[in-house]
Image (cartoon, rainbow, N blue to C red):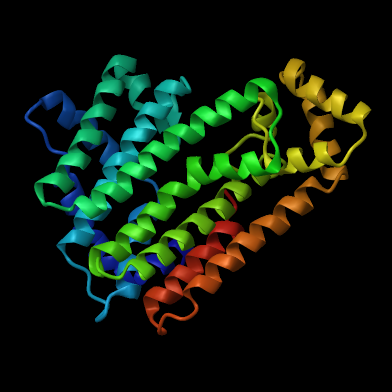
Length: 327
């Protein structure tokens, strides 16, 4: 059994019902919109985010039972996450998403931006119509932070002056904040009065998100045929942890050469390969891996006091999967 299937096992019924509710939450009177949302729903990924919502909710709930709020919360997260992906593809001028054509490739940018707006509003209204203002707040904060993280990254990429602290801030906002929202939302849907548990699960999700992004950055330096071509971050002038560490631990002459390579020769395959080798030689990968494991271990510590359950087991599996996955 594939590890993702194994993680999903204790919440199979919830995930099936969630998919049905999620489809319903997207419907519109406009035929074009329904065609596009149908296309989106049928090309779903691993659905890690709703899985985080349900596993967290079931682990922290008194009788391991979820409720309608949990389903709505998972749908809102997925609606808003999908909206950001549709917009991302427009921003990045990307024609593919998970191996399929992106919305902007099939229906052009104008429609893609409008579809993203539509999904965003559907998500907000789903919360408002049901008075889930506490859940709406969690999600709105995540959306704000994701936008800020992306913009901070763009601002820093121009100057290539990222410190390790700024890097953590970027990935916390860009990636970790959404997983943090899934976990705090799952908890808040079942124990809204227990702010300590909600905050603990938010932190848990944030730490997993940090480890997840560092793992993604490490893929850029591996030679195996994963979904991401080697050196793409360097080509896009993205400063990731392995590179930041290498730059902080080399001579000023080497630093000049690396920055010049990333700035002016990022399309030169030979030069990119040399930068990758330089990062490896400076132990950039080893350092990033150590940091990733540190975040992962911290996350596991946060849930160790919850009573044993299959949901807790699945969350532990999920945390380990995040840093062991091959793509």
